[in-house]
Image (cartoon, rainbow, N blue to C red):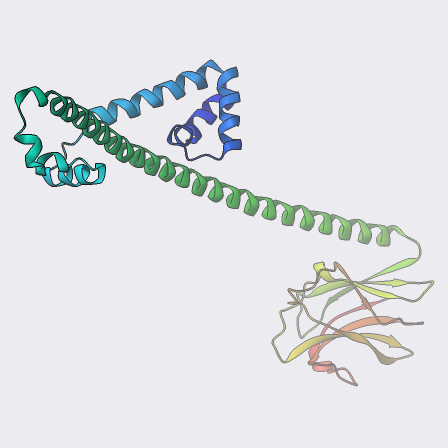
Length: 285
C-alpha cells in the first residue's frame, strides 16, 4: 500500500494524462493501472478534474480572434460574397446550415484552446512538484552519504586505535620486547613516554599516540638517544603534533646495545650531540 501511495503521489499519473511520458513509460503506467484499482481510479479522477477545469475556465474569444479563425478556415468568404446575400430566400437554407457548422467549430476550438491551457498549467504544476521532490531526494541522499562517510571514518579510527592498542599490549607482554619507561627531567618534569626495544632484532619503537611531551613549534622537534657505553647515539627525530601520521607505533633506528634512552628538544633535522639543557625525558634499560 505504501508503494502504491508513493507511486500515485510521484506525479507520474499527471504526466501520463498530459501526454508527457514516453511510449514505454505510458505503457508501464497502463499496466500498473490494470492491476491496481487505486491507480486506475486516480487516473480517472485526474482526467475528470482536467475536463472540469477546462469547462469552468472557458474563455470567450474576441471578435478579432473569431475573424482570424474564419480566415484560417476559409469561411470569411461568406460575409464578403454579396451575390450569396442577395439570392432568394429559398437559397438561404444552405447558408444557415453552414453558419451553424462554423459556430460548432468555433466552440470546439475554444474548448480545445482552454483545455490546452489547463493541461499546460497542470503540467507545469506537476513538473514543479516533481522538481521539488527530486531536490529533496538529492539533499537526503547527500546527507546520507555524509553520514556514511563520518561513520566509515569513525569505524576506521576505532579499528586503527584498537589495532595499535592490541599491538602495544602484545609488545608489552612479549618476552622479546623490553619496555623502557622514560620520566620527565628538569626541562619538563611532567613529561613521559615509552620506548619498546626488541632484544632479538634490536629494533626500537615508540608509542606515538601515547607520547606526553610538550608540543613543538615550527623550528624544533624531538630527538631520541640511546646511551651506549656512556656515549649518546642518535636514533632519529620525531614530532608530537604531526596530524598527518596514521601510525600508533613509530619505528626508530635500531640499536645493538643500550644502557638508557633519552629524548631532547633539538632544532629541525636533529643535532649531532644532544642539547642537555633541553633533556626532556630519560629512562634506564
